[in-house]
Length: 288
Image 1 (tube, rainbow, N blue to C red):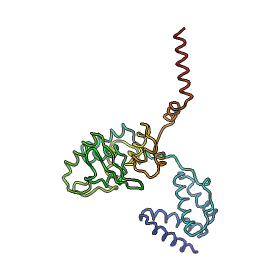
Image 2: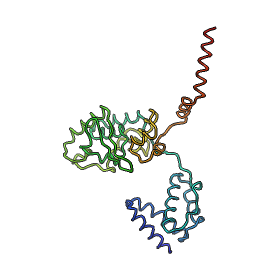
Image 3: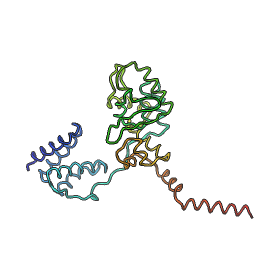
Image 4: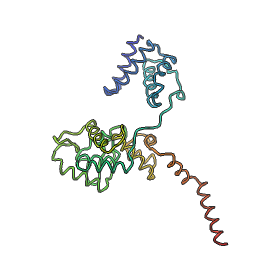
């Protein structure tokens, strides 16, 4: 097949998958670039030469590019010339996550706006995604319960809210003066889109002095980390945060080395044995 034919066939494949236009553009941009540089020759060598351009990028981004190229190979029935161990290593997550004190600071800044305060409070209570927040409807809330309509693969979930979060939502509903189906709306009664939520959050984050890149997902990452440190396991976190796979929480949990070491010492039987031996020694000394 010619380069144009390879490109057209792959574009038709993406159309069949039903990808959003933005995602489709990202895939096609990589494929178009690769086909241009390789002159339509799909081999191990052309992939390796193409990937050298991305050596300075993160492992996560390079793995995604390899995934796109692999889907191209498979779609045109050319054997993919790499095995799993040859793929770039994933980078550790570097997306900021908010600690409890940082969320509390954000809430204080948002307090004058009943809308912003209720949004931040609800997100910190449930770890909802940005799109899930935008799709909450008035009927989904019945104090103290909130129904979260899952934006990605996974199951809808009902969460119990703490009294302060319920108070924040009650106050907002009382002040919003709208008969719109969706709960979170603008002053004109227009439902807030995920993009609008990002704009509102960015203004609050700047005032709070958060570093660039801190967004709604930073709260979600924080919630997962808080709950994990509080004793919840991956399977429980899967249900609480609305994931399809129990492996997803591990990508969000962020612990520093010192915290990991303390967990090891608290869980490892050798350290517990040492504590018991130490207690026996103290007892013998007291007896003498």
